[in-house]
Length: 336
Image (cartoon, rainbow, N blue to C red; front, side, top):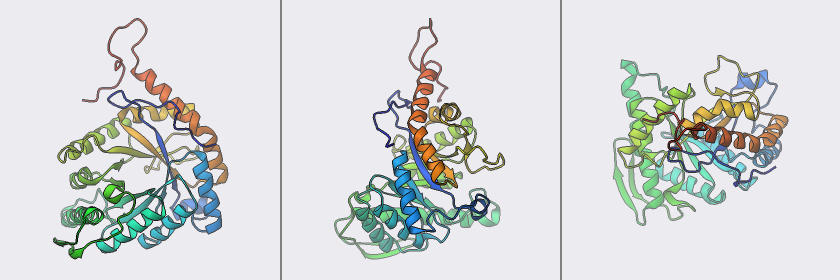
């Protein structure tokens, strides 16, 4: 079953149709995979190709490439994923500090060509924990994000400039920077980021097209979205950032797990669990955890009903009660 884009969609803050997307995030935790009796998603080339075809058929819009082997392996896996799919966006996990900007820009542009423009870049802050802000680590945390900022700025310049340029910055030096083949999207490759600190949000506000939210209660997510929008507004980008959130539909997801919102049951029950997040501004749910062929198949059967349930619940939330007059936004939570 392939999801049809004509399925009814919930509304965003302005009352306009807002597409709800689902991104497949293969399990990467070795202990979790062992407990589930599962091998890493990309362990077997033929099996992963078949699984990706199933993921695409199930109605997912994107797949995250984030292998524990590291950045260079991610490049290889992303190329393989692009070769065996036709519509999935390939979300490549990447970070500054391993590959020089000019080399990375060239490799990413080539991957953009190979994927037919389906590449997205998911930027991590190379291991600096967001809650690690003790005095002795603050300088390192700040420097990591400053390097990420400079790195992304250089990537965009390399994807857009029509002649060589020189750059001398605190972290990178470029002489005659230029790549002739900039890929089908140029500097328009979508960039995904995350973070909680003021420093990380400032960098994300400048560069991110999609911001991956930390899991939390709807009110906490709403506050973080407001912080990101405020940071983006400093660069004239407040309306240009979309928001994604990790979610698990597994019934046996441990309550103690804090890396994804738990929304068991498909589709109506999950829609009720997720509607508050859609109202807050989340338009993408990153389905995480170890998923075998049968779980992907079941998700495929439920994805369209889930989207429709989300749309119905969103509309029910914004319609005025019978007999009451007022704007169509009555019942919607305050977004002040």
